[in-house]
Length: 193
Image 1: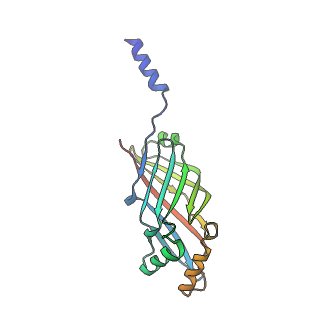
Image 2 (image 1 turned 180 degrees about the vertical axis):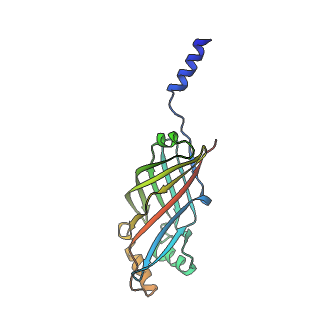
Image 3 (image 1 turned 180 degrees about the horizontal axis):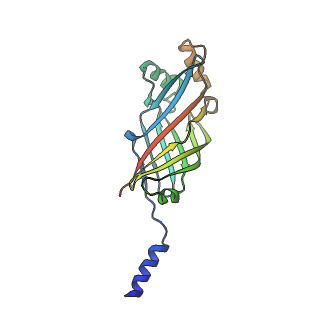
């Protein structure tokens, strides 16, 4: 009997950790960006339709529907969809990365961890690797957040969006629209207990 107990304890101690799959909770997540026009007028916008998951192997994918851009002005939303993002051709943007699942598995509820990751952003037919530092926070056994530590600056030129930005500037009769855009996010994920 003692020998059987030792075998069970040893198998539990030395077995590989079992990682869970995590699903993004849209209602508790936000991805926002700041646009600047006429040199010093800055405004915060966001996307309202996000989906994503982190697989048990650490493959993370987050997709945002570009039609869900929300600036607080309906005509501006429409112009951004049609003229900038061209959502008829490019309906969504996707972020892909790999997260070390040991980092998540080792976090007790209430703990956080800084993590440097490389995110591949697929937008407007282009894929660009971006260095991002995130804070992973374990809120409970079944909930975690992934938050950008600081804004990530995305340049319109990297994604072939500069013509769209110029078209928006012309339509709105503005002296300028900034082509470098700070992006921030706070993404909530849940898993089954």
